[in-house]
Picture (cartoon, rainbow, N blue to C red):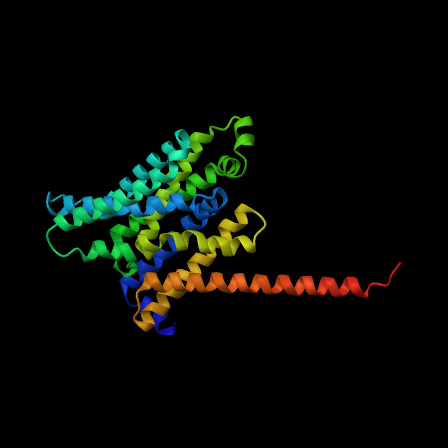
Length: 295
């Protein structure tokens, strides 16, 4: 890690990568908490995999149509928001078809992306990096877009905190309070879509769900409220991305996979530790009850 910290001060690309990881961790902590509370991880997965269609289309237009201003992440944002709205409307209107819609969006998005990549001249290494993540390729332009998306997600999470809290835990109560449950549900899915785009730059769309759920599961075991979970999850993700970057740089390993491996290891350690302490607590409680004199 000492080599990594020294290199951060010398190389701009490492500074951009570190900034991207820290920015993404904030939005991930906020939105991941809602995803866990609402139990919509499978929807987030469908949105994540549909992003490839937007990435491929944007890269095609950028290369073939010479729209040089069109960054692939712009296409990712459009595809993610479109997928979120389609899944949301199907979920609200025809709940029995929800799984089918998610599977269709998942498959169609990936297929469209592969076709556009195949028709785009040149070597599509930059697009393939979005599949498995290459945070070291973050450019200043990408960083500004990531910062803007992060600001939007966090601002929406703060402004509509009470409404999102209500629809995540008790929809009937929310309706009784006059909250438009459908509108805020769609808003939540759009926030998930934007967060997915943020995380794609860090760990790739294949591994987005792990970073969107596992740190929140860890934070949830140590928190007593959704707000505490958000803050703690953001801190955990920031630490994981920073340490993952350092380990991957020192060992010459892919950064996204390293971050996810550390995340999974920390989750398993937390799970095993919680189980161990729970057994110890039960054992001590049983011994204490046996030692009490009979009345």
